[in-house]
Image (cartoon, rainbow, N blue to C red; front, side, top):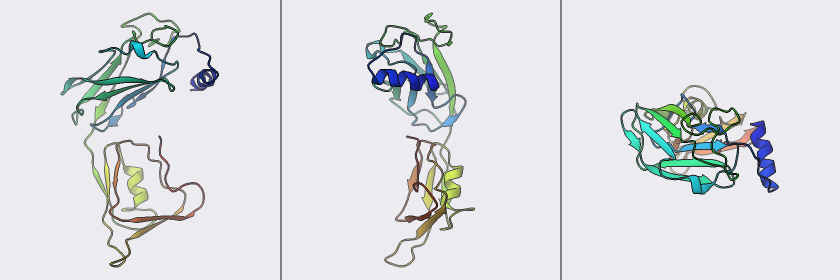
Length: 219
C-alpha cells in the first residue's frame, strides 16, 4: 500500500515507474463471500496499457455457472482493471478469477504475479484467486432505537454483500414518518457492496452525533 501511494504521487508528476506491475488489491477479496452481481476489480501497482486488455486477458469461472463472458476495461488514472460479467454468478458457487500475465503496464512490463520483481510470463505470473457467492438475506429494522436488536445500527453491523435492509416502523401519524435519531458515533461503514436499504419513508436524524457524518461508505 505504501509503494502504491508512492507510485500514485509519481504518476501525478508525470513519471512512470520502471518495475513490473503487481496486484495490490483484488475485489471481491480472496476467500470471501460476495453477491451474485459482483463486479471484479483489481488495483495494480503500475498504470496499465489499455491496448493489452484483449479478449481472454481475464477469466472468471464459476464452479456451477462455468466460464463467464463480460466487459474488461482499464481505469486509466487509477491502475484498475474491471471485469463486468454479462450475467450474474450463481448463488453457492465458487468463482476463480485469473488475470493473465500478458497484461502490461505503460512501460511494457508484463505482470509480476508471483511478486519476485521480474516479468516471467504465463502461467507463473498470472494473478489468480477465488471467492464464493452467497444469497442475500433480508434484515428488518423494527425499532427506532439508536442501537440494539432490531435497530438500524445493528442491521448495518450484521449486513453482508447482497443483503437488503428493510424498515418495519409505523409512522408517527398520517403526516409524519418514523424517525431514527442517531446519537454518539456515526452508523457503521457501508463497506459491503451490493447492499440495498429500502427506506420506506423513514427519516434519519443525525443532529445528536458526537462527531463525523451520519453514514460513511468505502467508495
